[in-house]
Amino acid sequence: MVILGIDPGVARIGWGIIKNTKPDLTVIAYGLISTPKEIQKEMRLKSLYDAMLSVFTKYQPDIMSVEDLFFAANAKTAISVGEARGVILLSAAQKRVSVVSYTPLAVKRTITGDGHADKKQVEKMIVQILRLKKTPEIDDTTDALAIAATHAYTNENLKSQNSNLKK
Image 1 (tube, helix red, strand yellow):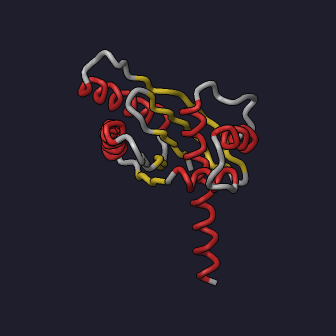
Image 2: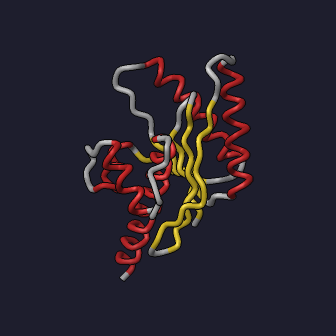
Image 3: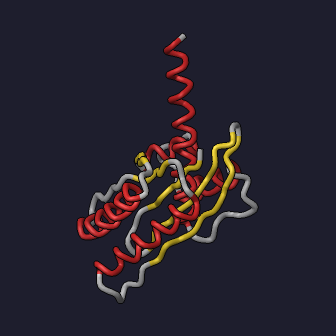
């Protein structure tokens, strides 16, 4: 299964593609989609949409795993990121790719075993789990890889729970 992980944003969208090659996870590619602040919001969203379609076309993921939004204080940021997330979901629908979402807490718990882990702990575990030579330079891409890995592990756990129920 090829999984596209997405860390949504407006200015910076991290993406990571992994393949579940049981028992290992293999990194295929990862990167960052950036949109310049100086252009109009609708053009930023179109740029994001076009870039997402390119990722889907190039890597042909089976599923997209995206982080749920959580903003306790800044409603303006939440709205902007929500708009970007909508465009990301639209691009998946356009390419007929199923989408699953995970909360930041679920990602941290799955990757580190601690739902309150900090970014450094998540980075360290992603480097180990995916056997990367070094931590990706941009944390949005590390987060995207963690979101993809979360789905790989969660999907495997669901499959084994379902097969245990059938016995």
